[in-house]
Image 1: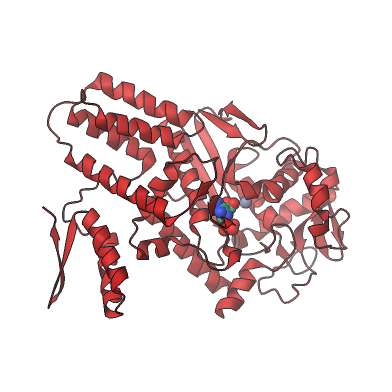
Image 2: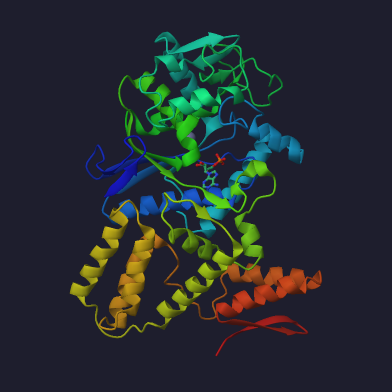
Length: 460
Ligand code: AMP
Ligand code: ZN
């Protein structure tokens, strides 16, 4: 497989250290609020990447963190702690906030058919691991104590700017950096806080340097090193993770290990909206549940994301999602209409499977992979049975529920839509209720209102 490596700025052959076994680390969410659909685009890309590797015959072990402490509103060490901010906003404890949004995050993943990573680890569960790493970094003179906090000294890291390639940019950006007088260099980063403006931070642990809590960057290094040992094959996130988060992860992990740590760094581009980057800090943002409440199928959003390359920005509009949903539902219908009679033409099967693999092997070109799927669907020479076998085979990566039997099976999502429509009707929000009726109609489901409540029938 070929994949773009942010470290080398090249598309490279992907070769794991241990033959067919891939160690994959993906940065997880900061659970202070719902995930927005931009975050979810990144998790869809990572899911497709993992499933592609599995489809190509690799065994993948994937680890992801849940950040429940230490991530400040700027990705550097300035601003407020996001978790504390969420807790104050909702008048709850940090742990309650973390639990609530971790749960909603995994519900979103489920709705999008995103496989849960093999290991999911909470940042707050690994404090000993961070302390162990930080102690060694201090002994080896990569880290220093200043006014109670522990900082990583970036001047000691070789190739600190290799991943981000942005030394000049950084110098230009210095004015924006809130000055922390404890740092030797403005871009040194915090490994452990004991004294800072967050003296009343609610989560604190004992450490050799006093009671405190970890910085955000050490969490991912710590969790990754704990589960994978000295090497990890691939580390993923979105482009905003390149600097400072992943640059800092490389610096501290390699300083700790004394050798190169991760060979492939793979980053997805942003989902944007008309105003630019979609972000939680902007206040109002788009969640998957909001899309569902507007009558969209979560897998139509997955289909929408698969239609564009992960390294290209994707602009979200309701119109384009609507178009994607129509195409997706039409695809479901076409697959459903394929008959089961006849034999699978093995030769044709292998040929198209190879084509599909080639698209994915080519830096995860999901839109070309979808094109192969439509080629299969439209090829007159192929039997229905061959088409269906191929499409269901492709769905191991695409995960679009192409095998769903959309006869009158009321799955939980449809049930939710029907219930939501009832709520809208009761609130006299008839336009919204009608929108849901239209969505269900596209799935061949007709709702009839009776005095005993809604009944559903198949169209035709
Ligand atoms: P967070 O919960 O803020 O730590 O972000 C979770 C993941 O979503 C990280 O990998 C981010 O890089 C990624 N991310 C944040 N904003 C966007 C966006 N607009 N589009 C795609 N990915 C994003
Ligand atoms: Zn991370």
